[in-house]
Amino acid sequence: QVQLVESGGGLVQAGGSLRLSCAASGRIFSVYEMAWFRQAPGKEREFVGRIVWLSGKTSYADSIKGRFTISRDNNKNTMYLQMNSLKPEDTAVYYCAAQKGGAPFDSWGPGTQVTVSS
Image (tube, rainbow, N blue to C red; front, side, top):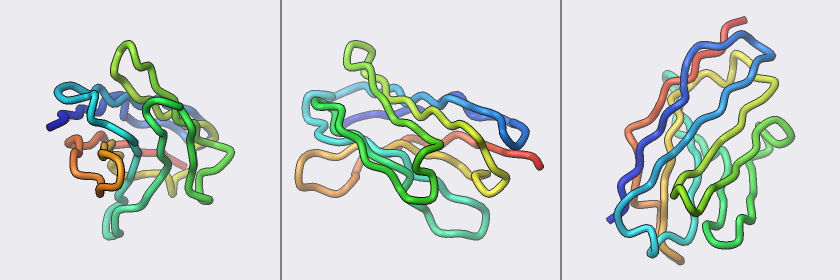
C-alpha cells in the first residue's frame, strides 16, 4: 500500500499562485501513475492532471491546462501541483492519488483545501 499526504493549500486571491505537495511513502516502487483530483462543494470529484512516475509524462484536464503544472521529485517521493492564475472556481479540496499500472487509483491522500477569493 502507498500512503499519501497533501500539503500547501490555503487562501489566495484570484490571479495568485499556490504550490501543492503530495508526499508518498510505503510501496513507492509499485506506483505507475500519480494524479491530482479536486472536489468543490456540492460537486463531484474532478480530475485535474496526472504524471507517470518514472517518465514524468503529464496530462491535464482542459479546465486547468496552461495554468497548472504537475511535476515530481523521485528522490523525495513527492509530487507537486503548481497552480498559477488561480480563479475562484478553482476553490476545492485537492487530493492526490496513486495507481499501479492498469489499475484504478486506489491510494488517496486526505486532501488539502484551496480557497481562491475574488
